[in-house]
Length: 210
Image 1 (cartoon, one colour):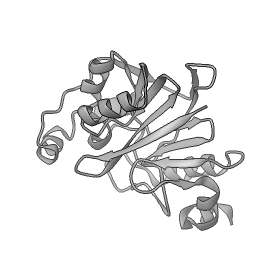
Image 2: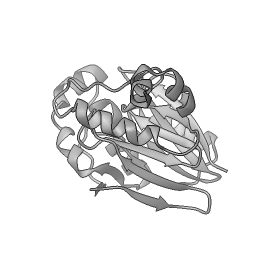
Image 3: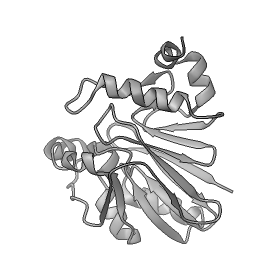
């Protein structure tokens, strides 16, 4: 059975998630201090962290990626188009976090969409959903949909930042809207929602359906 644990932290109140199947887990968007993540991992009884995934390269989603990757000897997976973002906001990030940012060392880049299978139950379908950034990703894990800063409860990610694209965002939202069935949506910030609820009430998604 796939379970998840949400951890909120960092100066921008980033949602870090631990998705796990019994003793095996994946960490998504490590913007929360590693000590907090480690306590959660221990409390959940997770023995092996197989991968760290960043939904995109903005500093609040990757600030502690290197420390977490080293802690669990697990690679950081990101889309290749977002690696260039890692050092661009370094000084702003360090000022906000009051800590030193370390560029990730154990990294693995992906260039498209793929499916990763870790255990009998834990399988992650990776969707490329550019718009907020060029390399933004959404993750489908069972009935969970981790949307990073692409889709939030009642709204969507910003497209007025360097590397953002409103046209790409529209196409990515169409891709999410067309996913079959319903999902529990775990966004990069804010409250958890469902895909059906967003189809019905999110003005950005409703516009695509009319």
